[in-house]
Image (cartoon, rainbow, N blue to C red; front, side):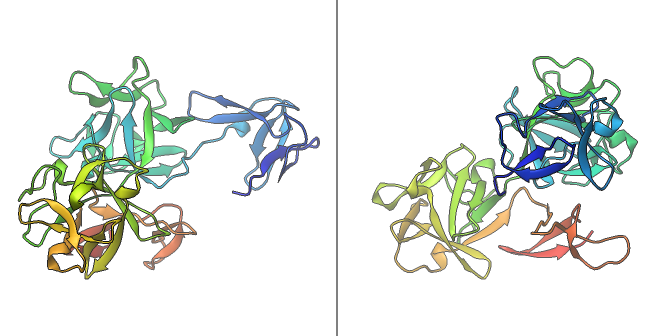
Length: 358
């Protein structure tokens, strides 16, 4: 965070600072089959190791003490994208299987919780089942749901059982299963934080949709909610990959690009309902013909939209010091946990939820 490097000194001690030579602070990173990494100092040839308290670099003989388990530095609520199939993992609780067939991660079935325990990872679905070695979802974590994670630059990960089996999409329907012969990088997925998708409903109880107003929720009525915590600005990305943008004659179209100024709307909240103000200062509302327009100078009921999560049946909260959760010693919520408790979202009214503990 401060631009400093991890430096290995001649006596094997480590410190933070700025390199004195071109190779000072450089380590050779090697990936091992068990998902672990070793880091070897380029200058001294010694391996990075730890005794549980201190970290040092003294030995040139490789051993188990030099093995490091990488942990992705992102929120544990994740989605997994296959660069080969251009689709996301999707859990189907009705049949107890996982498929790699979702072109857009707008449904709750595409979100997974990543649990780290005893050097292995467990993938929990939105219905609180677990991906297992037997190609079926199971209700409880166990040794059959534990996977070793291979991590590569660019956010690429692969999950294996440690005995030669690797998870990858198989067959014409892209069923996720354990196998030993992935081809052309089928086993690699890009790990990303699960984005927030929402639906917006007008005063007339019609869903805001890219093509036409609908009384039913469809993928074209779902929008990725992209906000900036530092400003009240919001972008809404539609299922076609483009952003809502104000165009000529005050119309709003789903053809914007991420950096366009016309795709940024100012957010106002009114008792759980969303009000959007366009770059021209006018407020978005539904015109008599059903089109979304930036017409109103003063917002009223016609400019208010009910908002619901479409891909979040629960939330996992992370703050400055860690995740929000409870310990085994007491039921008080703490904000410094290594892993979060799932907080179930129970809809009350549009934009308002009850929080239910596990």
